[in-house]
Length: 374
Image (cartoon, rainbow, N blue to C red):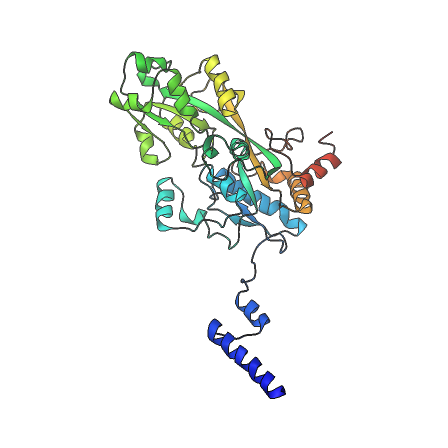
């Protein structure tokens, strides 16, 4: 009886081997499917921060965050290749791996005046938190504007950590030699104007500005003009009018202003009140004044619209203690902010709010302890 039963068991084992092609203990099978050990993440105190090139605003802030967190035992790994307008918020929201560097990418960056060494290789781990402009964070959270067609819908799991102030003004100017004092003249006289416009940081706001005057890219090109982004240096030699967000900065996203204001005499235009108010409503901007003397040729405060700056943010899966530490580190290491190549600032009255994006509970605990939030 024992031999018969043993034979049955052996037969069943042989059949199992023939069907599966292998016979290994369970622990050996599990070992074969194990993932390689993580190189980054909160557990290792090596979270990945989504930034931009080292001379881009988001890259400069990334380096500040990395330096600020060092004394608290955190080794932040920076992705300097996680930019591209709204793409940064998508990467953070989706906990995606940093995009790989490519030769095509390198060529595009050279055309923008960005050297390859300004974008070191990305870390080998998914992005945990990052920085973006306040409007992109709000639009990603709401699922509107640049994010309206994303299949993910509203990214309601995004959370604010800190608002870093660095104003971006909407500036409109024309070459002084043309005698343009109002954009309505372009349509009235059917001038074949060459326009540089910003569609990266302000969505379609530049399109709306032209539409206010009854103009479109198609109309301008039909009259013999053209429209370009102005990001590439060669485009900046061939323009009549500029509609761009920015400041007096060498950041590649908007250093068009620091360059052309020095090379050309410009007439700075003030947009009508009703148009400015509409931009506030449609594009979540604020009414501000371009400061007197911000650029060569600006000799008075000019009413316009602006964005406050940049938001450091993460997701709901961020540990509370880490969010608390980020808020604390950025507060206690404030001296790093004004000494960057752009002058950033920290305001305890505004650091904890960006539109309607919820504050991470860990960061909120810190701000309440300090009395910044009542």
